[in-house]
Structures are given as structure tokens and as C-alpha cells.
Amino acid sequence: MVDYKRHIAYKLKIGDVLQGKRIFDADKFSFIELGDKKINRINFVANVVDRYSSVEKSYISLTIDDASGQIRIKIFGDDVNKFSDISQGDSVLVIGLIRVYNDELYITPEIIKKKDPKYLLVRKLEFDKFKPKKVDKEVILALADKIIDKIKNSEPNGIGSDKLMEEFKEVESSLINQEIKKALEDGIIYEPRPGIVRYLG
Image (cartoon, rainbow, N blue to C red; front, side, top):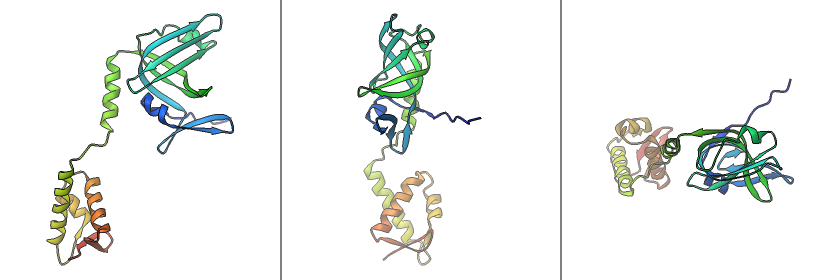
């Protein structure tokens, strides 16, 4: 029995997917490259802004929009009945596969579920939560000065970077690490041994 591994359906904005790099194997589309992710299944929350259907051809086309971009969902054959109740104006959760035809990126759906329009706000808040926080330049400069002062005052033995984290525990550890690294690169401090930093006076 073959163990079929289903790809992750990444929660993304339509605009991000449209800007991703399209990767092909020979002439066949493989995936979208977005940062370090290889994406061929998506999870969108969006509004249906346009609907076209053809009974003769057993075909439905839905255009969805999540305020970052628009993309079409193409539904063929037996799946037409499965998704026939989706109308223009609906808010939907879509899980499906990314496809490319005639240079157009579109979605073949696995799931389309109607959702309360508030669900779009919930998804937006999810994305905002993972946005890197902007830190004021002056705050960073003040933090850098405080770190250098703390290292200076720890002479003659230096201070452990973990101890610095404790001293500035109200600040994100990534910021402290960034400032320690910068001071090392600038030759203001040095590491007499791993994890210990001293002022190079």
C-alpha cells in the first residue's frame, strides 16, 4: 500500500501567492516558491466577487478576492454539483490545489465552505499577529547604549549573554541578540569565551 502524503494547505493571502515564484518541472507546473516554502495547496478566506457557469460544459468559475488580490477557482465535471450553491457575494473558506494554465494561476478546489463575513476579519487578525513588530529606531539606539553600559560595568570578567537577557527581559530576546551581534561585528565588544562578552576598551 502506498503511503500518500498530502501537502500542507498553507494559510496565505491571495496577493502573496500571485507574487510567488512559479516552479515548473519540464513544462508541468510543480509549486509556488514563497520564501523557504514550496506551496501547491492553499487555504484562503475570501469573498466571491464573480461567478460564471456553463451547464453544457459542466463548468463553474468563481473569482475570489481577499483585499490583497483576486484569483479564479475553476470547477469541472462532477464537482460542479458539489459546489453549485456558492454564489457571488458569499464569504468562503477555500482549500485547494494551485494550477497554472495559459499563464493564469488558478485554484482547483477540494473544499469550499460558506462562512460568516466576520471570518475574513478573523483571518486578517491571524496574519497581523505574525507580522514583525516595527521597533522605533531611537528605542533600538537607546537599547544598544544600555547593553554596552551593562557590559562595561561587568568588567573585569565580562557578562554572559543569558544574563543580559535577564537584565532586559522586557525586551524581545531577538533584539538583544541582534544588538550583541552588531557590537561584536563593530569591534566594540568581544567574546573571550563562548556566551561571554566583554567591552573592548
